[in-house]
Structure formats: C-alpha cells, structure tokens
Amino acid sequence: MVFDGTRLHDDTLAVRAGFERSNFGEHAEPIMTTSSYVFASAAEAAARFSGENEGLIYSRFTNPTVQTFERRLAAMEDMPAAIGTASGMAATAMLMLGSLRQGERVVATRNMFGSTVNLFRNFLPRLGIEVDWVDGFDPERWADACQQGTRYLYLETPTNPLTEVADIAALADVAHANGAELVVDNCFCTPVLQKPGAFGADIVIHSATKYLDGQGRCVGGAIVGSEALIKELTAFMRSAGPCMSPFNAWVFTKGLETLGLRMQRHCDNAATLASWLSTRAGIKAVNYPGLASHPQHALAARQQRAPGGILSFTVEGGQAGAWNVIDHVNLCSITGNLGDSRTTITHPSTTTHGRMSAEDRAIAGIEDDLVRVAVGLEHIDDLIADLDQAISAARS
Ligand SMILES: *Cc1c(COP(=O)(O)O)cnc(C)c1O
Picture 1 (cartoon, rainbow, N blue to C red):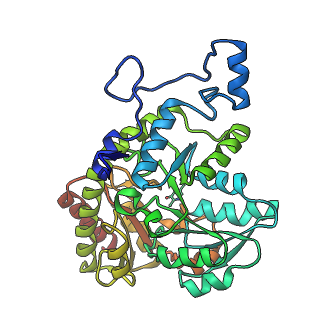
Picture 2 (picture 1 turned 60 degrees about the vertical axis):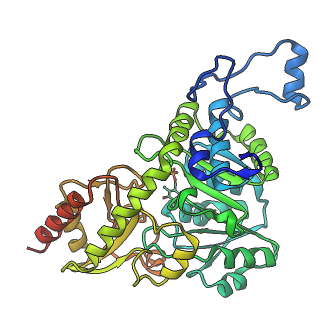
Picture 3 (picture 1 turned 60 degrees about the horizontal axis):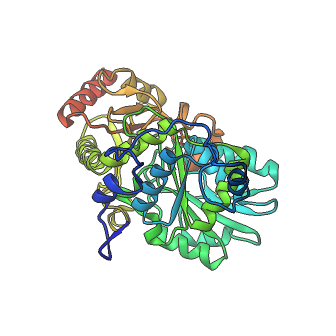
C-alpha cells in the first residue's frame, strides 16, 4: 500500500491495508458470511464461471472478508499476494500439492514443526515428491542436497523449539543458484519482526493460529508469494477446498491490527525471562536468540527486528525434571499452542514433537529435558514468580 509514492509503515498497513468498504460505508471490517453470490443474469453467471468477468462466485475460493485478510498480510510481508487457508498445515500441504509435480523434490531440515516433518516424511513421498533432509543450516550442505528436480528449499527460522536461526539471504542464494525457490515458515517472527521476502525468500508460510490471532481462538494459515503463485494456488483451492472461514479471517484481520504492539510486549517479556532463567539454579541452558550466548545471536540481530517471544530451556533430571517443572506452574498454561496472550509451557519431545521418530528427534536436538515457553502478555514479574516457584518445587 503506497501513499504519495512512499510505502506506508507497518503500523499503518496493519490497521488500514486491504479493506475495501462496501456501499454501506462501514468503518470497521465486517464479516461476510455467505457461501455464494448472485449474478444479474445467466450470461453474467456464465462469464464469471468462465473467468471472462471478474467477481465473486463462491466462498470456497473468494470471500471479501478472507480477501481483506489476504491483502493486509501480503502488504505487511511486502510481497505481492496471499491466500488464506484452513490452518497453517493446510498452507504447507496446499503449497506442495498445488504447485509440485511427481519427481520434484524439496530440501528441508528436521528442525521444523512436528506436523510439517510428518507431512514431508509420511505423505509427500507417497505422491512421488521426495524430501532431501539436511542437518542444520550450513548453506554448503543445502547446496549439496540440491539436485535435478529440486523446486523448494523449506525452513523455519527461528526453529521450534530450539530457536536456531537460519541465514535467509544465504539460503535464498543457494535456492536461486540451483533453479529452486526458498520457502520460509514465518510463524515465529510474523512480518512485524522479519520479512523473509526482503532477504530473497520467494514464498512465506504462516500459521495464523499463532501470533496473527494472538489470543488462541481460531485455526488458520496463509501462503504469501508472487501473483502467479497465488493464482495457481487459487485454482487448486477451487478444486481442493482447504479454505479459511470468513469468521476466522475477520479474527485474523483484527489480530493484525494489534500485532505490532503485541509482538513488542511478547519480545520484551521473553528477553527478560531468558536472562533471568540463564542465571537461575537448576536450569542447564537457555535457548533464546536475544542472549549473547545464542550461537546465531548476531545473525538474529541483523535479520529480525527483535528476538521473538519464544524460548526453551533444559533442566536437570531429564524428562522427569522437565515434567516436574511443568506440573508445578500455577499461572502458565500447559498446552501445545504458542503466540497467545497467555504464556504457554510445553514439553516438546512428548507433545508437539512426540510423533517424530526418536532418531529424527535426536538429530534435531530435541532432548527429553527440554521445556518450551511461549511468553505471553502477562506482567513479567508474575511470570518470573510462577516459574521461580515451579523450578524450586520441582527440585525439592
Ligand atoms: C503451529 C505451527 C504450524 C502449523 O499451524 P496450524 O495452524 O496449527 O496448522 C506450522 N509451523 C509452525 C512453526 C507452527 O508453530
């Protein structure tokens, strides 16, 4: 969205971009709950269905409320177009099924959201789409993994739950040198903290379920990319149907309005909690890109506007020690979700990453003594007090 020749700031796009007011002149974005649209005549219906005339046909693939969300998210990512999906996983699955062909390949790491690993491991190969797995983010290894037919390099940064940071620009170069495209799952950072497209990524995936909603209400996702890609995927959406509901799109659109403010607080709270944890007795190590001890601290500072709202830490006593801390929290919610106004605490190896094979988990470095905290919007003193008493109780 451009005004007098300059790109508007994110804060402005977040509250203004993408909304086209109806004839009622409403100020706020309404929810358009209709499955279909009427046509002035049979000829007009035919012209719309054939694509000769533009316009709405059916909400499986075009709905004004969903379009508002799509345009606003694309504007915030500074990329041409977006398509909303039923969930974050539907976004990844739809990108793969809607744009790849048998014999094409994907390069990825195991350090990803568990369901993404399962999709790549258990389902894509059945359809003749092979995944070449790389450990870590060394661009040379990614280049070595590229071969005839490689279409996508796929990554998350920072990773869940270890917060490893990948060099997007370096891996975009590897992708392009090999005739492939870089796909980045930007769920942890959101466009407020990181715009992968600015570093050369071609496609951005979102789980809107997380920070874009921000209050743990709805499941949804999005793919952001070129006009041509989104057109291709809209055709797939029309045939396959994993669409976002208008109500969820409205929740996410309103979520985008406050995303910048919320991310600021998530990051401030997480930074304070990470430094406190790193000196707390009973904590072995803390993973958070904002800590000077983080292996990619400098890269994160270049690539992200702030280190993010998620951290993880290891405790003494293995899985029992980790479960003990989790079982003693009073305030934090024991749940697998993240990006919520309420702080959540999770044991990744037995929940979010529990369906990965033990071998994949070991290679990804997700040990049994690891605890993940997605830091919410509560007052930081209350969060520290809660974890402090939980860690003490777990150790006694
Ligand atoms: C949750 C999550 C997903 C999947 O999103 P859903 O909306 O739950 O389907 C994908 N990637 C990351 C990094 C996630 O945290």
